[in-house]
Length: 135
Image (tube, rainbow, N blue to C red; front, side, top):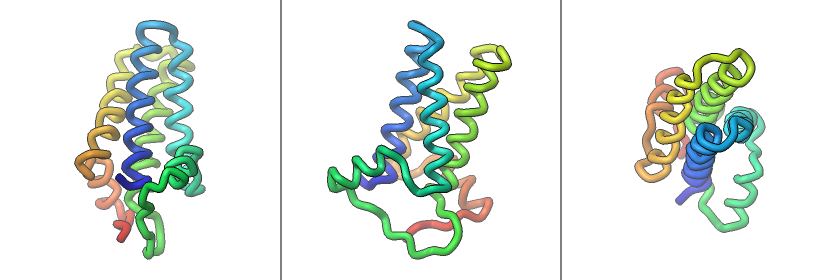
């Protein structure tokens, strides 16, 4: 497993667990969901995330990046992070129906499955809008 796939697995799992806890225990758990979205978004631009440091120390393989411009994994982080943050803010700040969090759950499931299959709709969208594949 690579660092990027482990990151998607962890992010998707935390999103799904925090959504369940937020729905059945306390809405305060949705802040954890938002934190994951924020981390995905900032890691796309900075290249740093606390989990990446841990995965590197565990010896997971890092893909080489010999391309100029933003990569497909960065595009996935931007898309997923933006959607997760947007839905959480809409629910927590603007009191939009919690049904909107189904979109967040779909993003979480997509991130988890992509860790195993190597593909998610976000990757296709990122390629279509010009993000580069890593080698």
